[in-house]
Image (cartoon, rainbow, N blue to C red):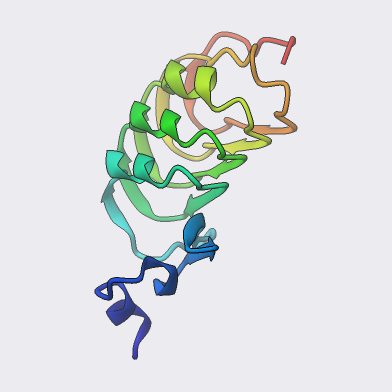
Length: 142
């Protein structure tokens, strides 16, 4: 069975790029600096994966904005979506609700607007926002 055919099966834990623990999707790993040929927008339905701990979607052609619905992924500790074509501002909802984030990387996109304020993110140890068009300063009381 080829990997792309697994996307059509009913068991998402067998899908290429997904990791599961006890039948719950915990990680999406698609992409590196060379990408996987993904394009389109980030679907808000990703927020239904509430057990997600890590999301790695880098080096592709993902466009549009980051859906604020992703704030429901409260177990997310790693969010890497670098080197895509994302636009818009970084959703404040994500910053307020994803308090377990340790790594946030949105570098190499086309995001703009005010610099996100990371006051409630005491777990954050790695932050990469470069190569976007954010304005303002990063709050130092992380």
